[in-house]
Length: 334
Picture 1 (tube, rainbow, N blue to C red):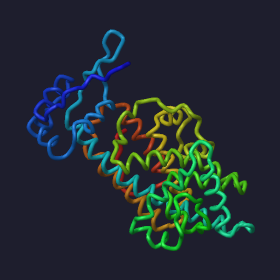
Picture 2 (picture 1 turned 180 degrees about the vertical axis):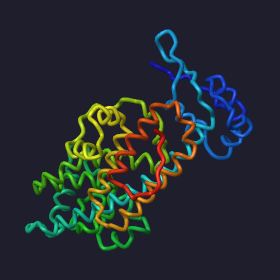
Picture 3 (picture 1 turned 60 degrees about the vertical axis):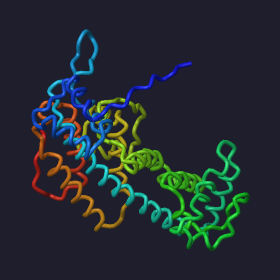
Picture 4 (picture 1 turned 90 degrees about the vertical axis):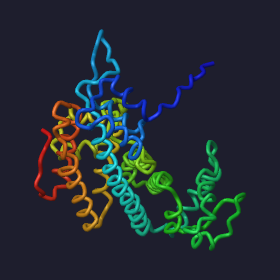
């Protein structure tokens, strides 16, 4: 039996010396300023997660936990950028969710045998009798019964937790399920009515659900960007998308092998795929450009020697130029 050894909680006063021991410098930001930042603005775990994006010393055939030319200010800058990126990604993803619902409703309208109840009843019956995870969606819905937000919907139905839910119209059902459940329903619906083109979006959306959960829980999204943890081949839609952005196969394979970069790529693709409002598209494009070409490069000199982050910037630069170009005055890290 493996017993995890408890590590003592590190006090803020101990954090700066600990970081200095990892060869992290305090030249741009003083030790006192860093300590105040850790106390008032960010926690040690989140902030230091960005250090993995920087080069370490390689001694006797292996990397050691000491960093080359890394100042605390670089970590602080990445933390701020990450926060801004999370806010924008969340806004993009909730629009994807909203317009996916509209897409489903529009598709339903053109299916002659569908009345907006049939497909929901089929889905809820499958969920209620599922062999591995029975009533998973039912239980998720039941948790919301007492919610003031959903009261108007649930007041119409006789909710009995021991019985299968019936005859909830699709336009209400879509409003009471989570994004993950929405994607599962979209897959079921696409299979049921043999909508092959819709079905191809499901695997892309599943990765977006993972990113949505990360940003909703304020998890760092710009850490461990050098990790190669995704070996699945991308859908041909993504390949064509990146080809149109003039991204070569070698770069595409390299960047999509990192799960977080893949999830962000899929999100940028799917937003333009499902969102139909030109006003929202213009608003998001402006926000992307302002973040990418203004805030992110305020301290671009911090990253002059960081080939990893420069290559990632160049990768997304090609996507933004091709898919979200609003012709603003631009600068680049490269």
